[in-house]
Image 1 (cartoon, rainbow, N blue to C red):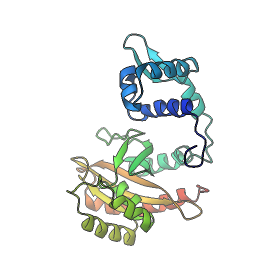
Image 2 (image 1 turned 90 degrees about the horizontal axis):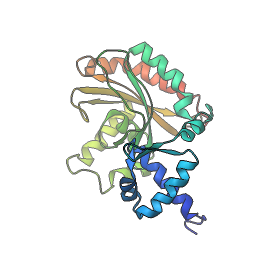
Image 3 (image 1 turned 180 degrees about the vertical axis):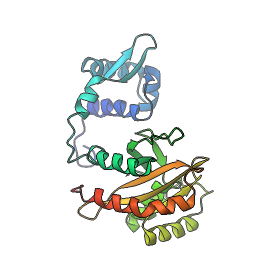
Length: 248
């Protein structure tokens, strides 16, 4: 019994193995064993079962594993009414067509932000935003939007985290959060990636809870600060419309 809930060790370990593939597309048995801190023989038995059930597949030439077809079959049955990544995709595509820049959707996940959906710009030079990417909360427009509109308690937990880098002043960051809350959106100019800029706005569900952050990003040469600011009203309006679609 852990945290009042019965945990089945084999299931827990199998799920930990599957979660390894959120960080890397393909992994060897040795790499997986290292990630989950289990003996290779134990991991091999679990991988054999997962492979038989179709949740992973093994490349005979490289001896590496990747997610199997069953994962995609399961994802195909996610309800559009429950999954923001699917529910908001048409609206994100519409915003991409309006601004012709990459549009991303992020959620808070622990002490990171997770990109759960992205619609790439059609421009030749563009921000490529891979879905599933995990990014720190102390830098970037979407990070600041998520933190700024979180509860005060959540903000303090984030800002007091031991992994918070000494190079990022907590005092200055708090000052930024106040400005962001006042104007309703956040901006980033080459904070995380050289030559890249972005603007982000919070999405609140129908119950008023912070659900996600919606961002538009692109190259600095095409999206200077003035352009980002001009995009902010439309971005906030689209974020408000998307929030009306999330039940919470």
